[in-house]
Amino acid sequence: MKIGILGAVALTFLLGCSSPPTSQLEAKPDTAISAPATTNLESPQQPVVKNETESLTAKAEIKSKTRSGRFISGEHTTEGKASIFEENGNYFIEFDQAFKTSTSGPDLFVILHRSPDILQISRPPDFAIAKGDYQIIAPLQSYNGKQRYAIPKNVRVSDYQSVAVWCRQYNATFGFVNLSS
Image (cartoon, rainbow, N blue to C red; front, side):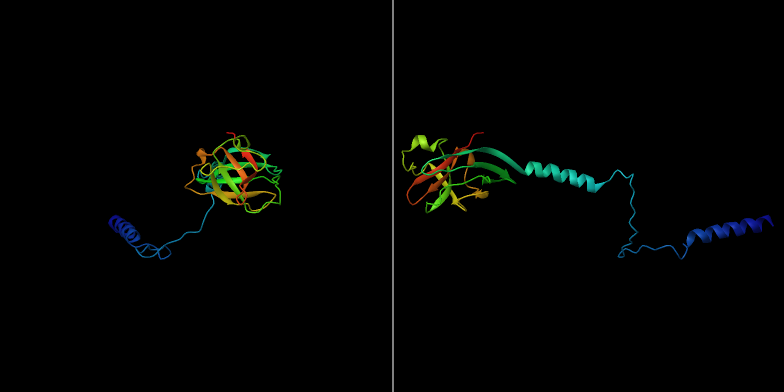
Protein backbone atom coordinates (compact mmCIF):
# COMPACT_ATOMS: atom_id res chain seq x y z
CA MET A 1 0.00 0.00 0.00
CA LYS A 2 2.92 2.29 0.49
CA ILE A 3 3.80 1.92 -3.18
CA GLY A 4 0.25 2.78 -4.21
CA ILE A 5 0.18 6.01 -2.22
CA LEU A 6 3.65 7.02 -3.39
CA GLY A 7 2.71 6.24 -6.97
CA ALA A 8 -0.49 8.29 -6.71
CA VAL A 9 1.41 11.26 -5.24
CA ALA A 10 4.05 11.02 -7.99
CA LEU A 11 1.38 10.78 -10.68
CA THR A 12 -0.49 13.80 -9.27
CA PHE A 13 2.75 15.76 -9.15
CA LEU A 14 3.65 14.91 -12.73
CA LEU A 15 0.19 15.73 -14.05
CA GLY A 16 0.04 18.95 -12.06
CA CYS A 17 3.35 20.20 -13.50
CA SER A 18 2.75 19.16 -17.08
CA SER A 19 -0.54 20.98 -17.74
CA PRO A 20 -1.28 24.47 -16.40
CA PRO A 21 -4.63 25.29 -14.87
CA THR A 22 -7.21 26.57 -17.34
CA SER A 23 -7.33 30.00 -15.66
CA GLN A 24 -3.67 30.75 -16.49
CA LEU A 25 -2.98 32.74 -19.71
CA GLU A 26 -0.83 31.25 -22.40
CA ALA A 27 1.52 33.60 -24.19
CA LYS A 28 1.65 33.17 -27.94
CA PRO A 29 4.47 34.77 -29.95
CA ASP A 30 2.15 37.14 -31.84
CA THR A 31 -0.18 37.99 -28.95
CA ALA A 32 0.47 40.79 -26.47
CA ILE A 33 -0.50 40.25 -22.87
CA SER A 34 -1.42 43.27 -20.84
CA ALA A 35 -1.74 43.45 -17.12
CA PRO A 36 -3.67 46.04 -15.17
CA ALA A 37 -1.61 49.13 -14.31
CA THR A 38 -0.51 49.39 -10.73
CA THR A 39 0.86 52.34 -8.84
CA ASN A 40 3.74 51.78 -6.49
CA LEU A 41 4.40 54.95 -4.47
CA GLU A 42 7.65 53.59 -3.12
CA SER A 43 9.03 52.86 -6.58
CA PRO A 44 12.29 54.65 -7.34
CA GLN A 45 10.91 55.44 -10.80
CA GLN A 46 8.79 58.56 -10.64
CA PRO A 47 8.86 59.83 -14.22
CA VAL A 48 6.41 62.69 -13.67
CA VAL A 49 8.60 64.43 -11.10
CA LYS A 50 11.77 63.66 -13.01
CA ASN A 51 10.32 64.98 -16.27
CA GLU A 52 9.03 68.16 -14.61
CA THR A 53 12.45 68.81 -13.10
CA GLU A 54 14.20 68.13 -16.39
CA SER A 55 11.71 70.33 -18.21
CA LEU A 56 12.28 73.26 -15.84
CA THR A 57 16.03 72.89 -16.18
CA ALA A 58 15.78 72.72 -19.95
CA LYS A 59 13.58 75.83 -20.10
CA ALA A 60 16.13 77.77 -18.05
CA GLU A 61 18.87 76.76 -20.48
CA ILE A 62 16.86 77.35 -23.65
CA LYS A 63 16.54 81.13 -23.37
CA SER A 64 19.55 83.15 -22.31
CA LYS A 65 20.03 86.89 -22.53
CA THR A 66 23.40 87.66 -24.02
CA ARG A 67 23.50 91.48 -24.26
CA SER A 68 21.16 94.40 -23.61
CA GLY A 69 20.90 98.13 -23.05
CA ARG A 70 18.65 101.22 -23.07
CA PHE A 71 17.80 103.18 -26.19
CA ILE A 72 19.61 106.47 -26.79
CA SER A 73 17.73 108.93 -28.99
CA GLY A 74 19.15 110.04 -32.32
CA GLU A 75 17.03 111.74 -35.02
CA HIS A 76 13.87 111.22 -32.90
CA THR A 77 13.13 110.40 -29.27
CA THR A 78 13.39 106.64 -28.78
CA GLU A 79 12.92 104.96 -25.38
CA GLY A 80 12.94 101.52 -23.78
CA LYS A 81 15.32 98.58 -23.72
CA ALA A 82 16.55 96.14 -26.33
CA SER A 83 18.16 92.76 -25.70
CA ILE A 84 19.64 89.99 -27.75
CA PHE A 85 18.60 86.50 -26.66
CA GLU A 86 19.75 83.07 -27.69
CA GLU A 87 16.95 80.50 -27.74
CA ASN A 88 17.43 76.93 -28.98
CA GLY A 89 20.49 77.98 -30.97
CA ASN A 90 18.73 80.94 -32.63
CA TYR A 91 19.27 84.62 -31.83
CA PHE A 92 16.54 87.22 -31.38
CA ILE A 93 16.36 90.96 -30.76
CA GLU A 94 13.66 91.86 -28.27
CA PHE A 95 12.32 95.31 -27.40
CA ASP A 96 10.67 95.63 -23.99
CA GLN A 97 7.17 96.92 -23.23
CA ALA A 98 8.54 100.44 -22.62
CA PHE A 99 9.89 100.73 -26.20
CA LYS A 100 8.63 103.83 -28.02
CA THR A 101 9.82 105.81 -31.04
CA SER A 102 8.48 108.53 -33.33
CA THR A 103 5.64 107.73 -35.72
CA SER A 104 6.92 110.28 -38.24
CA GLY A 105 9.37 108.00 -39.98
CA PRO A 106 8.66 106.02 -43.10
CA ASP A 107 10.58 102.86 -43.99
CA LEU A 108 11.79 102.06 -40.45
CA PHE A 109 13.96 99.01 -39.84
CA VAL A 110 15.61 97.24 -36.93
CA ILE A 111 19.31 96.86 -37.64
CA LEU A 112 22.48 95.58 -36.00
CA HIS A 113 25.44 97.99 -36.21
CA ARG A 114 29.16 97.38 -35.77
CA SER A 115 29.75 100.50 -33.65
CA PRO A 116 28.80 100.63 -29.96
CA ASP A 117 27.86 104.33 -30.37
CA ILE A 118 26.27 105.24 -33.70
CA LEU A 119 25.94 108.90 -32.69
CA GLN A 120 29.70 109.28 -32.30
CA ILE A 121 30.45 107.98 -35.78
CA SER A 122 27.68 109.90 -37.57
CA ARG A 123 26.57 113.53 -37.88
CA PRO A 124 23.40 115.26 -36.74
CA PRO A 125 20.64 115.87 -37.53
CA ASP A 126 19.99 112.53 -39.24
CA PHE A 127 22.90 110.44 -37.89
CA ALA A 128 23.39 108.68 -41.23
CA ILE A 129 25.26 105.38 -41.22
CA ALA A 130 27.71 103.96 -43.75
CA LYS A 131 27.02 100.91 -45.90
CA GLY A 132 28.80 97.82 -44.68
CA ASP A 133 28.61 98.89 -41.02
CA TYR A 134 25.15 97.47 -40.39
CA GLN A 135 22.90 94.48 -41.03
CA ILE A 136 19.17 94.96 -41.66
CA ILE A 137 17.20 92.52 -39.52
CA ALA A 138 13.54 93.34 -40.28
CA PRO A 139 11.05 96.16 -40.78
CA LEU A 140 9.93 97.75 -37.50
CA GLN A 141 6.75 95.95 -36.34
CA SER A 142 5.34 98.74 -34.20
CA TYR A 143 6.24 102.24 -32.99
CA ASN A 144 5.83 101.09 -29.39
CA GLY A 145 5.58 98.09 -27.12
CA LYS A 146 7.17 94.69 -26.77
CA GLN A 147 8.34 93.04 -29.99
CA ARG A 148 10.76 90.37 -31.14
CA TYR A 149 12.87 89.93 -34.27
CA ALA A 150 14.64 86.77 -35.43
CA ILE A 151 18.25 87.30 -36.44
CA PRO A 152 19.08 85.31 -39.59
CA LYS A 153 21.40 82.34 -39.02
CA ASN A 154 24.01 83.73 -41.43
CA VAL A 155 24.50 86.86 -39.25
CA ARG A 156 27.34 86.59 -36.76
CA VAL A 157 25.89 88.43 -33.74
CA SER A 158 29.30 88.91 -32.11
CA ASP A 159 30.33 91.21 -35.00
CA TYR A 160 27.78 93.84 -33.94
CA GLN A 161 27.79 96.11 -30.89
CA SER A 162 24.47 97.93 -31.15
CA VAL A 163 20.84 97.62 -32.20
CA ALA A 164 19.15 100.58 -33.89
CA VAL A 165 15.84 101.79 -35.27
CA TRP A 166 16.80 103.23 -38.64
CA CYS A 167 14.95 104.96 -41.49
CA ARG A 168 16.23 103.44 -44.71
CA GLN A 169 14.60 106.04 -47.00
CA TYR A 170 16.44 108.99 -45.38
CA ASN A 171 19.36 107.09 -43.82
CA ALA A 172 18.41 108.45 -40.40
CA THR A 173 19.03 106.73 -37.08
CA PHE A 174 16.01 107.27 -34.80
CA GLY A 175 17.71 105.67 -31.79
CA PHE A 176 20.12 102.92 -30.81
CA VAL A 177 21.13 100.63 -27.96
CA ASN A 178 24.75 99.99 -27.02
CA LEU A 179 24.78 96.25 -26.34
CA SER A 180 26.86 95.93 -23.21
CA SER A 181 27.84 92.40 -22.22
